[in-house]
Length: 178
Image (cartoon, helix red, strand yellow):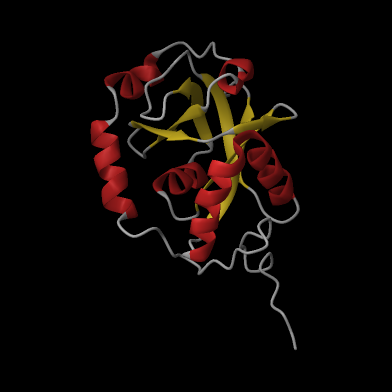
């Protein structure tokens, strides 16, 4: 019996039970994201104009991080996420076909700030760049996120695995934009 290599197909290998269907998203993911963007707190939309003096330590002290990515026209798009830090970088897991991943593939620059679950910033942002991980790097990201968020995250991720949602990991590296 032969087994196909999920890493070769660009799919996550960090979670044993994950058998994602390429392109599969959560039901109603797009309408929910659009509604969330409209209902995000004003501070989340305005954070892009705040001086980028934030730090990884501030993000580490918060349960949530606000990722601010940019549309083609330069409009900032805030998204609260779970993020865990290891070795000076942040790791995030998200749907592979989400808007933030599409925007980051086009322009890897983003801002990151500590936030509440609703996306209200709790401090200034920091400049960073993000990339979608593949292969062995995903294991580091999974272990880092699992260690930080524990049981509740594990239950959430198992639900994603059961629904066979196509997920990926992001590595967010702080650094000034050039």
